[in-house]
Image (cartoon, rainbow, N blue to C red):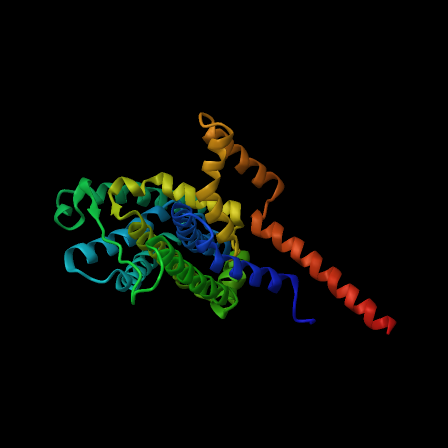
Amino acid sequence: MAWLTWRRALLAAGLAGALVLPFQIWGFTAYQFTFAGVYAIAILGLSLLCGQVGQISLGHGAFYGLGAYTTAVLMDRWGVSAYATFPVAAALCFVTGFLVGFAVLRLNFFYIALTTYALAMAVPQILKSSHLAPLTGGVQGLYLERPGPPFGLPLTMDQWWYFVTGAILLALLWLAHNLINSRTGRAVRAIRDNPTAARAAGIDLRLYKATIFGVSAAFTGIAGSLGALLLDFIAPDSFTFWLSILLLVGVVIGGMGTVWGALAGGLMLQFWPDAAALISRDLALPVFGAALIVVAWFLPHGLAGWLDGVIRRLDARRAATLARDSATR
């Protein structure tokens, strides 16, 4: 059974546990795990930008809001199926992210951060505009009707959307993994590590970086669509600058540039504030901040980086054991 590495065993156990989980927990807890999956999708998109391009965005909450409003407007104004809105939101966010990325990625690190910060601050105000109110609902927001399980499936609403979110998350994890290991991913990392050498090799820096920016925005837009449906209501104040900061925190906690780190980041964003409140409700934010400092200090590569290191050591030890056993036969 040389094929059975610790990594594969952990992956199989995680998938099995995820399939059984919604049948073993209460409805609201399943809802919380579903929202952790939504956060994980958004964090995955931002992690691609931060880890592969090497650029921090302070405005991904704007793309989350754009995806949410795309789903809400299509459902409320034109009666489009909730499931059909996901690819529309992804496409719209990709185009917007690509154009924003192509425009700003020629700037240096700090100016890009400042530009994306301005984007995060501007979008909620634009959504409140009286000129867009007939479409977006203005400050009153929009209500959504989340569809239930189809074909008479014996699942609750929370269980069904847990599996929908999980399936989308797995598909995007697979896409992100393939992108990172593709020619595009290697080109982007070459740009990040040595722009001069990459340019000399004929790589179009702005095109590749803008493409990853667009993919990152598309992932975050899909998360926004799912988040809007889970909340059954959206309003401009749901997509403030604080949301962009939370997503960036999730990237740091999970592990910047890693695929599976998005899962750890999503779970931390969803459950750690509640755990901190159990320690001290009045000091929930300071406890949350202290945890971030601990992670940044002791786990510089995030939870996924730490776990990957553990798995590598276990696999190396297992390989050494197998080699020793073969030599003694």
